[in-house]
Amino acid sequence: MDSQGERAVRLRLTGAVGLAVVSGVAGSWAYARSGASASDLVRDLAVGWAYVVAGLVAWNRRPANHTGRLMVAEGITWFFGNLQGTAVPVLFTFGAWWEALNMAVLLHLVLSFPEGRLTTVLTRRLVQFAYGLVAVGGLVRTLLFDPAVNTGATYLDCRDCGPNLILVPAWNGLFDTFDAVYHAAGWVISAVAAVAIVQRWRHASAARRRALMPAWIGIGIAVAFLMWDMLFYVVPWFGEVGSVAEQAVYLMSDLAQVAVPFAFLGGLLRMHLQRAEVSGLVIDVGTDPDPSKVREALVRVLGDPTLRLGLWREERAAYVDGAGREVATGGPGRTPVHASDGRPLALLHHDPALSEDPELLESVAAALRLALENVWLRTRAKDVATRIVQAADAERGRLERDLHDGAQTRLVFALMQVRRVQRGLADHADETLRAAADEAETSLRQAIEELRGIAQGIHPAVLTREGLGPALNALAKEAAMPVVVAAEPRRYDPLVETTAYFTVCEALSNAAKHAKARAVSVSARHQDGRLVVETVDDGVGGADTARGTGLRGLADRLAAVDGVLHIHSPAGGGTRIRAELPCG
Image 1: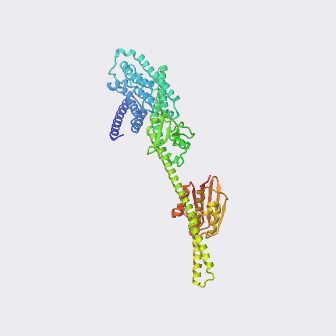
Image 2: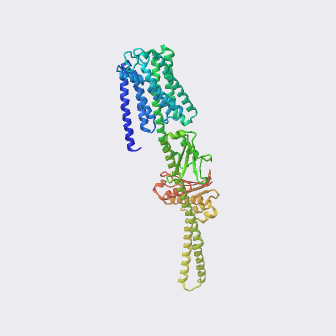
Image 3: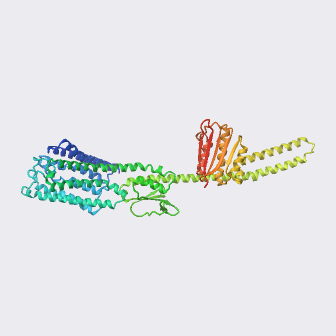
């Protein structure tokens, strides 16, 4: 809504507040004049202004829905009948004519709730007939109504009220007959409206039934008034002015009337709670877009157990639910969810009644879009990280092979040649030449050892040839401290083995450099479809991923292959590093 529309709504709301105040004050003044007690006045004002307050809230929250305006109109017209308690002819006549207008407005409210509009021919005809009955029938009844003669014709105890400005005295003899017909017509309308609401309930889904619940309260109000009217006419003594029974019925009907606006406010609060729960969808979906899990979260937020959720499957070019069935895109009650770049993400097949709350559906769609895009980005990021790790490991293997088959082989060949020269110089008289040959042989041997160490650090050949267990044993032999290895003789995926191996390398390096450990134990075992590698040292502890790049990089490397790193390193209590990698 633009600023001009907001100003228009505020202006209408202000006008409605003014009318409600004038109507309430005038009606209470007239009601008090007719002999109403303080409790009667408070109860009467509570009913009328409860409708006004609830209607103003509804009107302000959803200005496009007419329900709020109807509730305000119900609150304003609630006081019209009280004007019969005045001695001002114009006010008395107005009150007598429009005494039942609030009942017609209430009927309109109940039959149009929660959409704010009449959706069937029957309901439109009923409301038209109700307004027509009040406008035409109320006018004729007022023409016949003499307050001095027909003293029990209203709910007010006022024998000196009036006079009626438009009374036709010659017609007064027809008042009782017409009044009975007038009320009978109201009974018929109430009964047909009750049948219409029951039919709506029977054919409604669970979500729509929850929305229609306030209408059932409206039915209770209509029944209360119908019961009062029937007893008033069938059992004359029941309706005696001031009787306990009459007051009890008034109290019951007033309380029922108050329940309607508060029921509607409860519906508004429920919708706000639903919107508040929308933010939790991102957390509920998490990193796993499992259709059944997402659907459960949506059902809880939308309150629609019939909801079907279809996630877009590129390979099938269709929306597919958790059972593998395609969700059709055509028909009512469909809300598509697209990514920010226009890609299809999901389709909600929900109760059409939820379409009457487009703001809720838009909020749900936005939250679901954020959650699914987050999952998509996480998946893409993990795929990229996995490919980087795979490429890095492949490059490590290539470098190790190149060093072994290239530079190392040439150095070994050169060493063999130098040793041949040494044998030829064994009897040579020049001692300096023999010493130079010995020095060259020593340098070549050292270069080969260093090259083998470099190759081993890049990618140990034993890991490729024999697997993780032998590679860990070889690593333990070269460690600067005693290392005990317990590894199952089993092969794993090359990427998993490499990741596990360098996890142990990092742990042993930290134990030697930082933990001042005297001994380390290493274990590798298969457990519940995962490779669990664990190192435990007896060092000083205090290891923290936040204070070093080694462990943090190790955690990132494990995450790239869906692995998890656990570190337990209390100060002075040694360090336990546990890595879990999926291995099928």
